[in-house]
Image (tube, rainbow, N blue to C red; front, side, top):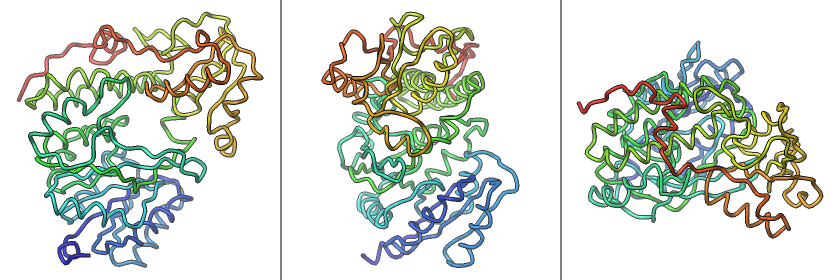
Length: 417
């Protein structure tokens, strides 16, 4: 490790809310980093379990650790602001308290930051389910350094949407990215704390717009733990979620209109919000009416349905179809059926579809490229193509659809400031 790397302080901020069973693995993985010049800030946001006690114990064991324990839950945006204001490093890296990181992560990301003088270093991540890595995901940009000219030409046009439905040029997640601290101070501190859906996007995309140089890496050091009890999978108040999406939409729209790239960004923002609405609406779409099978079309009432996919959309869809009087669910399948079953969700492997009765198989993945792969696999297993239902991607007036769903409904005038 070069002398420059040793003298540059990096702040790692861990946001914590319950999840005591995961916290030790998270903090231990940070303490074990090969890059030692760290300050580690544990922000407990009013946990009701033993997380505050665990944070205090780590603070006593390692002089690099500062524990900030709040008495009440103030939300993720507020917790991230607290961690940032507590930090003093030149660069800041966020970790969620139920995830963990590989021991070379900081060292491998600080090196490119120093060499390229980057405002952000962006890596991929690994998704874990039931303790197993099930997917390694990269951002949809070639690895390398992007100066301001390349940002404008190559990043901003696909930042939120590549042209494929629910495909990001750069993932929304605040974790898995190394930020220059002063960039975060300019773009994190004014985030509307009413935003409880899309907090990451409200920070990441304005930071990208404010960057002069970023570095994109193909490597993935961050382990994102998929939890079946996460709020995105268990929350049932779809109308509240739509209100939340409206706040996020207005916040990002204001930010984008203040930039010089609104013409590129606003259409992407519409598709980005539509992808969030697809997952979070629970079928409540236009003018508060409910379509239990949204976002799928051409599936008649009374149909026998197999739900294919047990991720966020799949869990929401399966739950509401099980309660429906209009459809009969005959099966639930996923490539990771055994992993989901081990977590208490009874899902069969995709190969079991051959023994199921169905009129339609509904592919519960909104990522267009993932849905393509799943459809091809089902066809190979003998499923007729005309019995496969996929997300309708709404190539028409997306802005109108959002407005009718309660997002940007009042047509308030947002002006450049």
